[in-house]
Length: 255
Image (cartoon, rainbow, N blue to C red; front, top):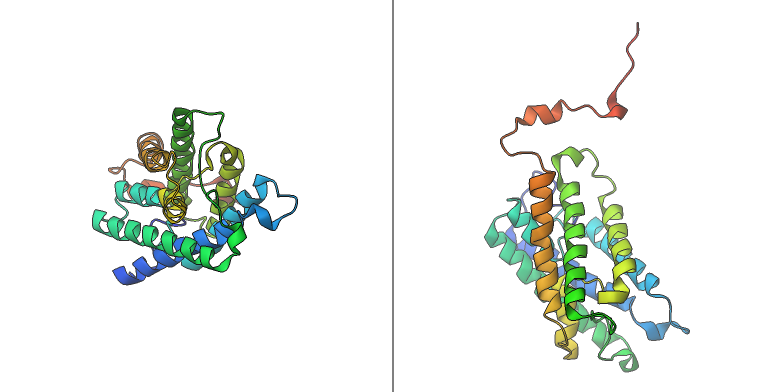
């Protein structure tokens, strides 16, 4: 999520990339879902707290693994990276496999370490609000994932290459913001593996298909919007990009 791939000239081995994505996604589920246990707070905290918790966990993980694998943590992000030709389809499969395994391991560890009284069918589950239809929930997941992918592609854009210092903070707050507004309606998954692990380990697959179709379709739509409306044409001379001068780069000349 933080970067398309590693940001240095050093090219990590596939095993290193696999391990970074696995550990990163495991931490996402372990720490992120730990912040979603309502029984810990009495009275229960507003949903904004769990949204902020997930955002800050994303920040932590990108800071730790972003320079290694890019810290995708999400098949939708990897799909976008493959479509943008930032990685090969084979490497994309390796990333997605690591994300699924990591999500299962992270959530399983959480189940082991928290009190049994806190474990219920709704622990860290994403599900549509009872007052909206499945089609409405699907549309919301598609839209919010498309928004997330557009933000990600904007950060990956060559025109943002000189602004890498706050990537972790940016994504942390982007996730928190989207989760705050859409969380009450769908759980604001935007990530198939984030919904998959609780569904499997809690045995609750009600309306689970939404979180397979919505985020991944949203990723393709977000890619299409950014690619064909906002990205730099592939055949454009790269030198012209370097010649673009920002307002903060203009220096007054002596008369």
